[in-house]
Length: 612
Image 1 (spheres, rainbow, N blue to C red):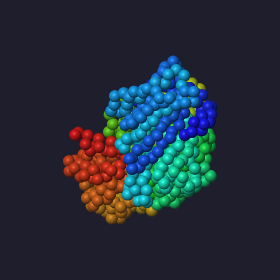
Image 2: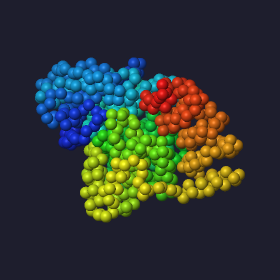
Image 3: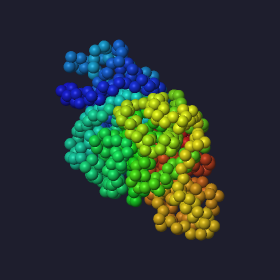
Image 4: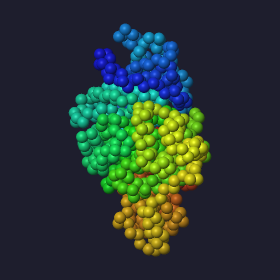
């Protein structure tokens, strides 16, 4: 980037840079934010598909908070070529050192910044094995003509493609210049153009301060289709029209959320549909949510995932957890807001079904996880923050807010949440900060409603409190009645069933269901061949347990074609329970591995090879 443009763009971020640094300690980052923080980043990167690398430089604006003369950054598998300081409008080399490799944290990068420099630049390149990037060959894409690359930075994988203060306690704005090979379109969690032109050089600006894990990039053979004035879909052509139809309710979701919790503050809300190897259902990268194609079901039955990623625009992107032990502040709030969006648009019946399914998933996790991992404000210690991701921060956090809503009443609790989003907008907070705010703004104003000891039980004790909400659904009660009749030889009346009823039915079939009844179900409803990824997942998991061999080839193709961890990891976990299935699962995994994201590889190799 030319120096004049660099200096000009800095002026756009002055108002955002006034936010003081968060003082919460983050054991998963080498950054010393209370000494020097980096409120603005300028990126200049070239995308090299042949070498599977990003190469270029990162330029930071420095905010000094004491007299230190060193800047501490996080890196992982980065090659640092040189560091420079901007002194008298000239870039001058400066010394840097790299620490030892830590198995979770990567390497500390320490740069000498003197006492007066306001800007530092780091020239570097990524490794082909960068944990936060996936590189797909043309053959691994739908179009088969061009390669594809995308990032997944949460929780601490930004440091694998940017030398950065990789802590959610940091808020920074950024600009970027990205160079790609001819014919490819680059997009970022920033202001993406809707132009079909592909000049090979792309300029981006993110003027709102975000945590580092929300910096995102992708490049591939993408097409664009607008849904409304401020919502568009980016995707490979094969799925573009289907995705635009599937997610047509997104503008209405934005309006419903604004009515409850205040204005949407990120200008546009676009969706990038990634290849099936994307390891998550979605990633809430601001302005451009990354979405798995597995939710393009053809009947809009899985759009609660879009509601979830959109909800992060308030809970997570706007108000962020200050460390990864506080993840529930992101995901619990977001799961709550997601369900409220679904209720506003699709009614209480559907929202109740989704809440009840989440509760069932949580109960399964509570049985599987050690008690210390079922605490909302979890003590991770030096474990990798990937370990914090379970149903606990999502659903237990959601139920905590449902509990507060029931105790204080929806009207009052909605006013509290709206004020909470306003008061902490564009800030990162800890559980302790939330507790103090909750006490001041809700508990003290409505005394004798909820005791502080109960708040402590929710946040700091394992499991669920005895008086926790236990979501149920009348629709599922009717499914249960049908199931019992069917098990006695009756017929299922499924014409009005949605994906949610099917999931409840399959997930609650007795484990001693006979082989004949498995075959009967499959014959009548073709569950083995279901193209709904969630229904297929539930059925294939049951098929593993019941040794239903007619589903084995479909299980193989499913594991080979989908890289979403929520869908593949439970299947590998179930397969790993018997020696025969473990051997088969390892064979399938080795075939699938080249198409899996590094994060998917890490999770499933722990399941399949953990004892080796």
